[in-house]
Length: 192
Image (cartoon, rainbow, N blue to C red):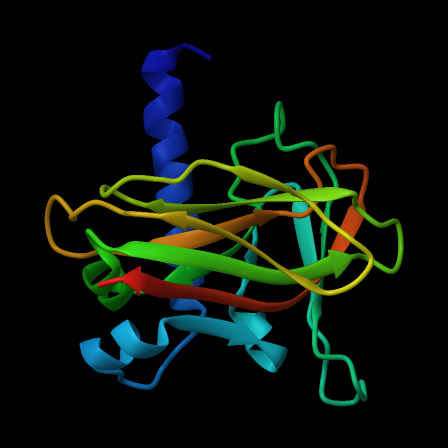
């Protein structure tokens, strides 16, 4: 496919996935900008159902009948490089987050371990905005025990009104249905 067609179609595809993710719900409580600045974005437990799995990835959320299971299992069936245009398993952060996080250094943290079945040796994560910059994919080696994996990024100012941001996780860069377990996802301002 020629670049003239590929990039507009890829942008439309990504916008459609994001619209779908937003329409599926997520945070419904109203939070002030001060709350977002202080607490950031936190996703854990049954709230993991707000995640979206894009092409080539999957996730399984624990349900209330699973005692002592407080993590989500993520897997990648295809490699990120050379696979379909995809954000992996991603969390969608609404316009308020983009507005509050803009032009501030944020720390993106994923608390994870190797999966219990077909464990991945590494995973990637990245923070993306629609028009205020992107961190690109960051790769981390992962251990058998839950640990925090983090990086910092400073999104720019939105070019227009604040839209949405998202945090993508690719559970295994090589695919092969390898998995990781994720206990918590946080995005917090570290430099106001």
